[in-house]
Image 1: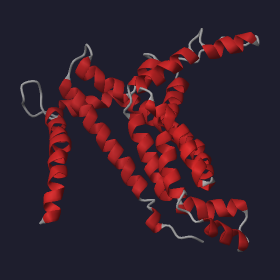
Image 2 (image 1 turned 90 degrees about the horizontal axis):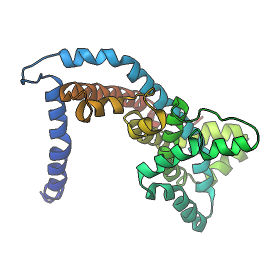
Image 3 (image 1 turned 45 degrees about the horizontal axis):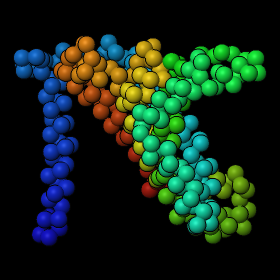
Image 4 (image 1 turned 30 degrees about the vertical axis):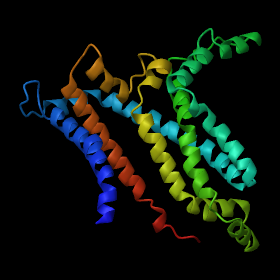
Length: 268
């Protein structure tokens, strides 16, 4: 009984801010302006298939780059002395203390045709190169803004891997490569799956990054949804349908990710 009382505020919060909004999205997705049931909104989502593909593709690339960068960083941090780990983690978290919009705007200054990077390249007789308003700029913005979300779960898992486990693997004849693929990666799978989720979900639904760094030619799902609610093409019913399809896509991808649950992994 006491446990039910303690969990009541959370249950109320979850109903008001999770269940009710989801029901509202589903309602608007399957109704028209007059409130009548219709499947037209869902069928109209198909005409934006290219935007869905572009969003998924860029998000996957950004997530993989974050994983490739964050994995060695997290492992290095986890092997440091305790008093150094706090300082290094503060440096990792430091950019997140700045406003998200300002961080992205800073990259506009760096990547602009007359920006800092092109000015430096121009000093050596190179460029100017078109760095902004490209898919690469969008991916760069995603990686920069979401990299800490990959490092943190990886670090929290790797920090718990006992050094004696790695030493035992080496004593039993494992090379550095074998230790990585047969010991470290299997033991860090919970951090990998959590990191991928924490990066991929906000990346696929972002709209500020694509708008500021991608220009109008790199429209993503987040931009499309925003246009239906705040843009000139105001259509909340279509926007809700797009949001619903996006949620289904994310759920499918996360379900696939759960198939690689660490509980099913066996160390060889």
